[in-house]
Image 1 (cartoon, rainbow, N blue to C red):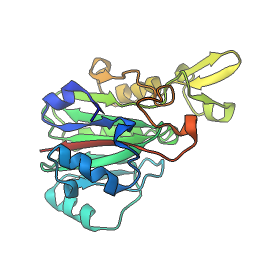
Image 2 (image 1 turned 60 degrees about the vertical axis):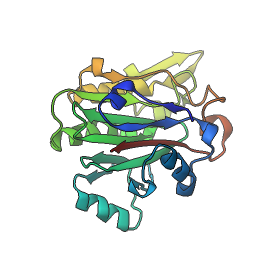
Image 3 (image 1 turned 90 degrees about the vertical axis):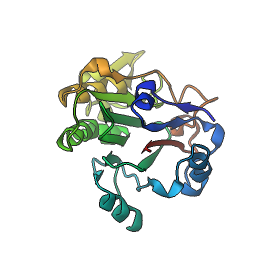
Image 4 (image 1 turned 180 degrees about the vertical axis):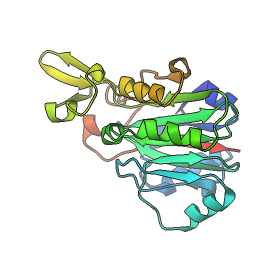
Amino acid sequence: MTIFTDNRLLASGLIGGTLSRHRGNMQEVAAQQPVYQDLSIPPEKILHFHQTHSDTIVPVLTEQDARRVQQAPVQDADAWLLAVTGWGAAIQTADCVPLFLWDENARVFALAHCGWRGVVKRLPFKTAQALKQAGAAGTMYGWLGPHIQVCCFEVQEDVAAQFSPTSLHHKNGKIFVNLNLEILRQLEEAGLNPQEIKTPYYCTCGDKENFFSWRRDHIRQNLLSFIYKP
């Protein structure tokens, strides 16, 4: 099982990352359960929501919060904010950015599904702000998991106009969005040190061997990203 992750996240005591496509399509929660079992994570302790490319953040700060989310109907949202041991959360992507955030001792941690619409709605900034408001202490860290990179994310002018000009790349009369730069800018604005934000160049669209991609294949197959605190 190949999991793309950040060693700093693992060193903090968290378990998480983004799976390669080799474990199959993770669109259904049932397909995810063997993954968690292989990692000795109780599948029922991983929370799920229905992603809508919004800026809605679900706070799970207590055991009671976690139980309430677990037992309630699946809600619409795109980011998790957690501060409870023994629980985690998952998102699915197929070109969008899985954004992982955590503080120095992993007391507070977050996982956000950042599609371009969510980025335009400033979900990275809002998630980082929510982390701070929930009591994040010491250094805050960020890691962007595999997603469509600037090499492949061509857009039309109507989409480009919604991004900062510094996040756009023009080549041969075409416009490309650099989501790394846009998210980095938002996280810096929220107070993160840019040296603590890692943006590895894993392109879901360009690397068919390892990743599903909606932009490339136009097939609904999803990668799994998750975060869990034992």
